Length: 314
Ligand SMILES: C[S@@+](CC[C@H](N)C(=O)[O-])C[C@H]1O[C@@H](n2cnc3c(N)ncnc32)[C@H](O)[C@@H]1O
Image (cartoon, rainbow, N blue to C red; front, side, top):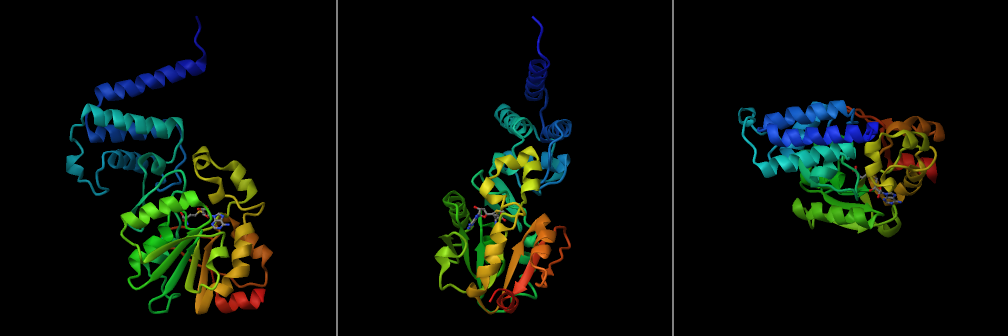
């Protein structure tokens, strides 16, 4: 009987995984094997690493519960059969299902903190991390600032802010109950409660009467065209976390209209809109957005003061 091309490919791939279990022995063997598999499968890297080698190092160390700074002198350490089986199944998951690494290891690092991540939330990757690590200098002047992370997902932005800014009081909110379950896990693991409060809310709906010195948000902002063309990896992420109407700005428009009511006099709003920034400039030609600059990459993050918002929307 003649085999079809696809069944032959699947069989030979299965054979390679079996050979890996039988013939590879060390951590460095598995890093090399993963990198080759990732290259050959032409995976997309956009969820924490940007190349096959870094992703290979990350998958092997994370699956073995080893730290990111695991010493190079120990890479020759021999693995147990169970550890090899565990690694092969993770590599298969990454290659065959194109699952982002964080959904396989349930870990992602943001601002140097480890977050629990699963498919109920987006994988943390916002360039806002750099602003957090600089204490939002020079934009956040208040003592004991109240900060809102709107559309918080896993809670990464708000929780990292709470960890970095000692005297801050932080509220993180999201419309998705599932996302907030993950945020609760992170709040507990990072030991941030009661410094970080979690509120379920459709934007500001359940935050009436609340005011903040800083509102920071990474809302969904992918436009319909980009959404249709995103690599398969993104299909594992919750759709509610990515798309926001034809031009990607449905949610951002609402945030702009409502934010001033929730800012203190010196308060400001920081929002990430990524590739949708030209559409935002075009939609609001009279607003002078301050586009923040990042040393370590990223763009499409604007800042507006309360006064600018009042002038534009009242
Ligand atoms: C791009 S994700 C960002 C998550 C997180 N801030 C991060 O940087 O990883 C956007 C989040 O907005 C939430 N969201 C979507 N619509 C919302 C709404 N109307 N009100 C509040 N949150 C909303 C989604 O559930 C998702 O968690």
